[in-house]
Image (cartoon, rainbow, N blue to C red; front, top):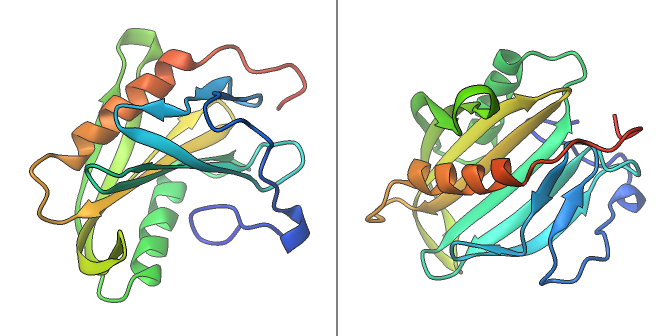
Length: 187
């Protein structure tokens, strides 16, 4: 694993499951179901970083609002949420020239015993989105689901008329509502 997200050990380890574009994808290790579409987002790609599918990323794009959103799931491997959060911040800052860490916060999705509490970091930098260089805002969210981390990274133009954390909150709520019991042997 390099930085905040898993990296395959060899190119041959990368695998995109054969899933119809319009079909949901059920992740066996966490019980999460990733929809083909949600609230303007269209699933663009699913990448599996290991044969058992413990480490995956699911990329979504919202072409109308120009938002790129990627969900990452990977085992905790004994790391704490605080350690993972700091690693994500370091990784974002190292990958984007001139990136600034703007804010940290908490995002709660759900209620009572099924609530997910994400730690959130916000960044500003210049980059390419939809084929154009522009000022961007990016937010990284991470929480722990049993023996896995769930991280969401969302990036859009810096001058959008909506709060990116509200968009991610809606997406996280949708994911949370799909969670079933993880498959036996998926741990």
